[in-house]
Image (cartoon, rainbow, N blue to C red; front, top):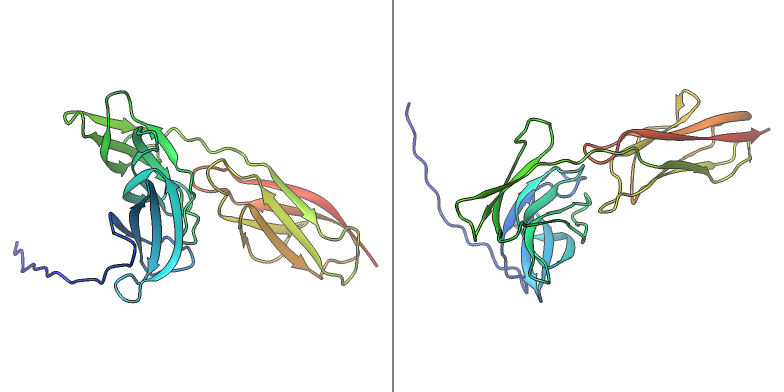
Length: 257
């Protein structure tokens, strides 16, 4: 089979002021964009700066920035949760080492509190590889060590999604026919990040519009079309890939003539 001709050439990209680049990862870290984004990581006064740029090789417009305590060296961008997250090695301010996952918020920023998995005694994670090693449809991590070069540390993902606490409220109950009523659903946040995905609102069996994306754990819909009477308003949370199962909550809405 012919190999063809392969060649590469260096292209100089202007430096980013006050941001000495360390690892650079590419991925769609902003949910609303289909274009690729570049993540630049730099150390600043013992902490790690995560910066996401749009169109990095051209105008490098800054989309979002997050500072994580300690030195975090991401080597993999994967969907451990619903948004694109970062996995890598980590050294905390006390000098402890391990593997960390920094969860993306879907807007170009990241949660500043990583999931930190400390190394076993005498082991210092240096590089990682992410894949599903045991066939359970959950991403696992294998880590190489700088102190024990002949050993690998395998971290099997034992996360189990839980049923979240969902509630729904009305802005006006009872209301009068024709008045605007806003229903708001709240999904209780998990420790490291807000719940993601969406909520669909129903009046009885009828949908009150398209699914609404959660923002900071809440989603809302407004309507003026409820007929006089008592309506069962239900907010159905879709669940996400890893942390939360689908769940719902209902209230009774009274509409007067």
